[in-house]
Image (cartoon, rainbow, N blue to C red; front, side, top):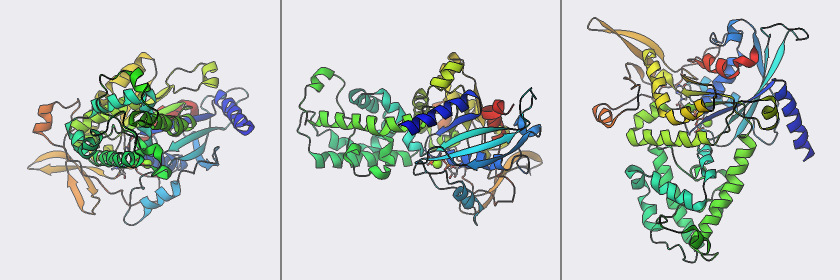
Length: 463
Ligand SMILES: Nc1nc2c(ncn2[C@@H]2O[C@H](COP(=O)(O)OP(=O)(O)OP(=O)(O)O)[C@@H](O)[C@H]2O)c(=O)[nH]1
Ligand SMILES: [Mg+2]
């Protein structure tokens, strides 16, 4: 379509001039994406005034003039509800922004004074930053693009450990009664799919991450549609793909395989193509502490889910040519979120643990020569670091207010700096309390290392 073409061309020209950057804020469900985006916008809007952004060089050098929200490019995508998120944080008592139910977009124009004055270079310059927010569940589906129905079914059965299997027991007993070559019964498939969706929801509640299909967890407008009525089939280990393809068109196997493929082509691919293909930079947010709270099987599951998720992105150094025609992510950050749940001296361990959790993808990125930075941050800091004296000894502590409104001063525990071994889980449980956001003041939202993240992700464009 001509309008799309014009838009794409404008995009390319802006990219070519380094004046536009598309940043992917990614992370699984509840990782802290909405909080990160709300804080990012808030910090940049207050830049040069109340925001504390010393680790962002353009701000430290007094060259960052501020940022404004401007009309986004794609008018069909809802605008990121920044004002609503900010209003929840400002309510009494303060509340966290709602979980995200759909995709939204935001465009910021950042004004700055270039650091190196050059001939013909203006005194002030602008960088357009495009940001997206979406439900974490939808991202769980990207790895599903690598599969056909057969390999997906096998992978799903492989992935399920005992605790997850237990949650899907109801579904499993029903699906084991199906025969591959039975004539498909619509109502029966719908009912078994619902049991599958229920099992997935229970697994998510229990802290598991590697759950597909993501739209089963958050169907949106697809609720009840046949495209969401499929599930992996058991007992396919010895099956021959050719024989399966020869089953009647209306058989259980072929019907489910068709729906799986429809789901890939019409739900996952468009989402990926429209929103995730053309990013320049990426931050992967990980709720490491939440996974520690949830126990060993969930922790393992998180590591697998993140590994798969990162395989779906296109990483590579950008030459001018590749940058114009196939934009790739040329720099990324990985961040352990909600670092304000532990005392500051634990932050280095949190980063160590994050690196261990993402060891495989990090190896691949290193091999591809893509700069990656690991960090811990709190997009919206809800606690204050304190020191308490107990029996003459000083020790670190956190002060905050629990979600129920109880003031709390406590040492929340030690973070292991490596992947915990089984003995560790037996020896020590984790119990990091969730805190309420702090009552708001007029300035920017309190944070930990949002400026470091900004410096790494966009700092070079503000040089
Ligand atoms: N203490 C603290 N809690 C945080 C922080 N960021 C997020 N949280 C907590 O984590 C929850 C989830 O954060 P969101 O930003 O909504 O996560 P999300 O990734 O957008 O989640 P979905 O929209 O469900 O995919 C929040 O409701 C807070 O309870 C932070 O910086 N500090
Ligand atoms: Mg969200």
